[in-house]
Image (cartoon, rainbow, N blue to C red):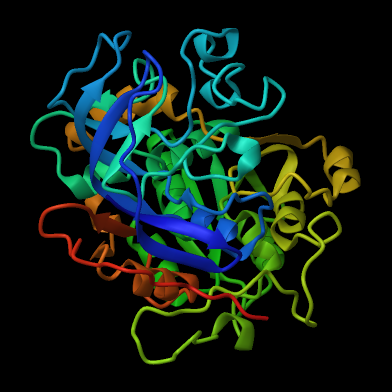
Length: 418
């Protein structure tokens, strides 16, 4: 089968790999029909997160058709159309039973203290082969995959695999409630859906902070108030708009990207450009003065802004991805304001049934947020455009299988150069 495989920092390729097989009674094999590219994939390719094993299949978002189930998977059958949650939980340990699937004691083979297990991640997360492939082995399939209702579009369904649950979780972490004023830092796909989730959870007002005009316009279209931090000081603006009080709740939907230049030469690199149409550059994380960031010491603008923007006794919810080595945080400022900070990886399976109902009922339409539908024939070019934050690129879905350009053969690489 074909899959997107990472072979080294900045190097990925569409390769022919062995099809997965059932390895445990709780496994299932899913034929992937749609996958997606996520910002987390870029972190892994750039080396922001260490420990990626060469040969790991990338991707942690998928919908597909169940092809085969292990003997202990009793709630699914071949032919079922399912959404696969990005994080993996066993469903039986005390954490899973309490809804903390991302902190499962069993799923991560590195042990109960190893942290979240998810598809297509570094060695510390399993590793588990990812979902940018024709077929995928789904461990603990009696717990993870959820059947989709008939008639739900692929573009609606794919955003239920990771993005919408993570955004909903962000608003829950921030404790959004009736009438709250909420600031969302980052207006990418998670930020956009975090704004929508905050409004669904009762927020009275949402402020969107970013510097990309296309993203800010999308935020405005759903009723948020845009703040372009390239054009005005976001903290001064937030305080002015809230009569000096600050916002009740803050959502960090940016993460480690706050340490990466968002404009100027580093954000405008065009990459490999050797004419074959399959090569690109995904640059390693660099700081504005040159050289690589030291993740433990790098300043984090968004976390600092979050503490400055939130009102006294307010709450900050962090779903932006940070590597385990990240240690810088303005704890003194937070303590002196009695700020509550909650952070973590989403417990996707906990929220999926409710969110499927919200989408199926028409209360929320996710499909408009899919701005590009690509295939394996164009996926490497899509990675390049997504990495460069080209205008209008919010979320990339990738159709897999029949009619998807799976005629791609041989090796195509994505090179990161310093």
